[in-house]
Image (cartoon, rainbow, N blue to C red; front, side, top):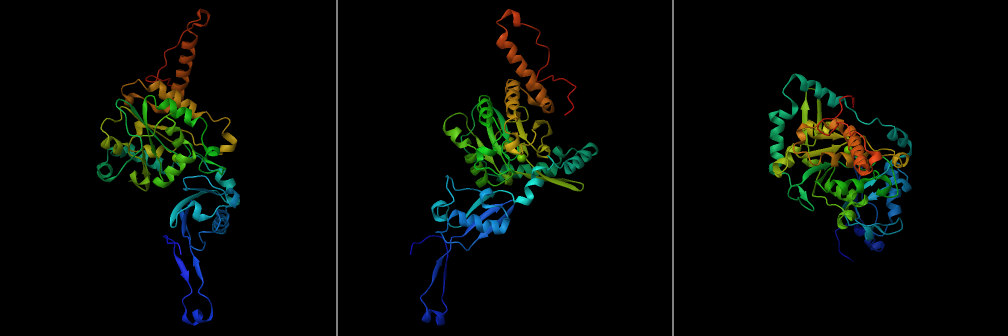
Length: 371
Ligand SMILES: [Mg+2]
C-alpha cells in the first residue's frame, strides 16, 4: 500500500477477521476553512472527487456545490478530479461561498459597523490618544521583536510604502464567482502598476498567510509579479495585528509601527495604508485612507472606479516629502484635481485649450469635502 500521511481505518476485530476479509479504507483527511469555522473532513478517501467533497461540504454549510469555491491547491482543477490529485492529506484549504438563504442578507450588509470605532474616538477625545497609549505601543514593540514578515520581492531604495488590504478593498469576499477574477475589484493591476513606480507594495490582510497566498494567486497578482508589471515586497497576516481596547470597545488593528520598526526607511512621512475598515488605522490615524467597500461584484464591476482614483491619488502625492501634512480624507478631491491637471498639461501645447489651472493641491485640498 502506498504510504502517505493519510490515515487508514482497518477492521481489526478478531471475530470478524476470521469471518471476512480485512477491509481497509484509506482516509484522506482535509480541513476546510469557511467563514471562520474549520470543517474537518475525515470520511472521504483520496480517490473521492472534488465534487464529492463539495457535496459533503454542502451537508455541513448549505452552500450549493456550484457556489463553492475551493482555494489552496495552487493550481486549477475541476470537480471530477480526485482529491489526492489536487490536495495533500491533512491540508487546510479555504472555501468561499454563501448558502442560498444567506445571500440576500450578505449582499445587503452595511459597509462597516463603526460603533466600536466611534466609541474609541469618543474616548480618544478625553483621554490619552489611543495611538499614544503605552500598553499598545508595547504590543507593537513585541510584534517588531517577534513577528516574522514574509518577504516576497523585498524593498527598494528610496521608495515610499503602500500597505494594501485585500478583503472588500481589492476583492469581493462576500460574493461567489467562478474564479478570483470575477471577484477582483476593477483596475487592480493597473493601479498596482502605477503605484509600483513610486511605492513599494505590502499586502496586509486579517487572515492567515496560506489564504493570502491563495488570494494573490486567484487575483492574478502573482502572475503579474512574475511578468514584471509590479512587485509585492512583503505580506503580513492577522497575527501581525494587535488588539486595542478602550472602555467597552476593542478591535484588532493594523499598526504601521510594526513595519516602521522593522524597516526604518519607512515612517508616517512616506507610508499610506489603504483599507475598507477605518478602525484598522486606530494606531495610525493620519496614515490611513479608507476606501469604499467592494461588494456585489457582479453588479458593480462595470462601474467601480475606486482603484482608478486611488492610482491618481498615489501619483498626486508621490513627490510629497512628508505625508504627515496630508489629510487623506480628502483623497478623492485630490485625485480629481490631479486628473484635471494632467488633462490640462496634455492640452497645454494647444493655445486655444490653455486656461487657468486653479490652486488645489494634494497638500492643500479644498475644504468643502464632507467625507
Ligand atoms: Mg478589508
